[in-house]
Image 1 (cartoon, rainbow, N blue to C red):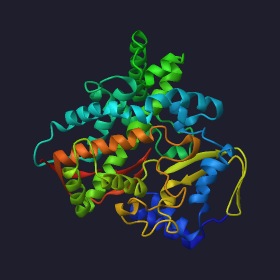
Image 2 (cartoon, helix red, strand yellow):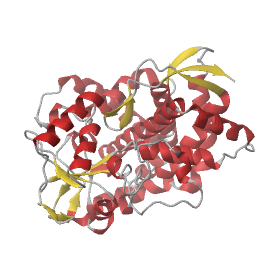
Image 3 (cartoon, rainbow, N blue to C red):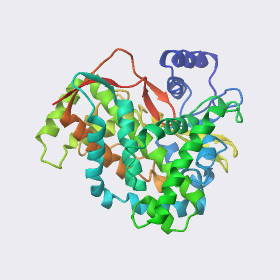
Length: 416
């Protein structure tokens, strides 16, 4: 298996120091070592694969050789959630949850999404500086709780805000990578508070289970409170954190490319009520390509696999990099440039080169919901406010539970 030599290792270290993110070293190793390499760190040496063919194997043709359930904090937190189960158990949970997220039901959520966006932005004052990373999280958190659990969480937001952020931090890369059982006492209280909040929602719904949302489907299926909690927490974190990252990165990119923002706003203004220009979809897709919220897939090999002649043994941890695949120069022209036009009608990309929602039987269950949400919120925000970027601090990609723009996306807002 190719491994970085001293010169490549030094180059990777320089990229880490410059970019303050492991993404820099990953790009160095991808460019210098190839589409299959191993990270040779102390007590942590996963294999990394990238490119369309590797993605096809991992997600479709040889997916039976991999396990989603890993010995890590994601499994600790989500327990038997749909994201960290395999085989028939996963298929059972997914079948219960899919009806609540079916594309045909999405129009019913539009008014609610707009109402929550209006609530959050009602306090914005002309000339005020807002952080679109924080504000986007408020909106998407309110939306996912009401859409999936039937609860208007506006009054609950102050008390669940810290527990939700701590849950995200709990599953983000950290020292646990090297020391699996490292003590993490600061997480106990906020995670208990988040559990208590979800169990209270379950208890209240059992008194009135009629709503046909995700929680209603789980209760009707006869799941106990613990298994329902696992699915709720999975969807709470995955369902809002990914949308938060998408919205924040879209605003960051529009701020860096005012010509694109001007074209998009003009198109939104000219569109018929309830419609959106195709260019909005192109902007969203390009933001997802450059900064996919779920930027890497984490698997455990049940059987050995062969990638480009390199054998990865059974029992090893395998990462497939969506981020590197979507910036592969063999698949994308000027892969690091922000160019929404690459998604114009009729322009196609190689299969498995674009994977922001994964692919195959375990593709993101909320893909349609998340894309509809992004279109609705971006349309509302860009038609209601002017956004002027404040480039006081350079934005870098932070590898947390999702790929976030840090330290944030600061913009001056003015109501149009």
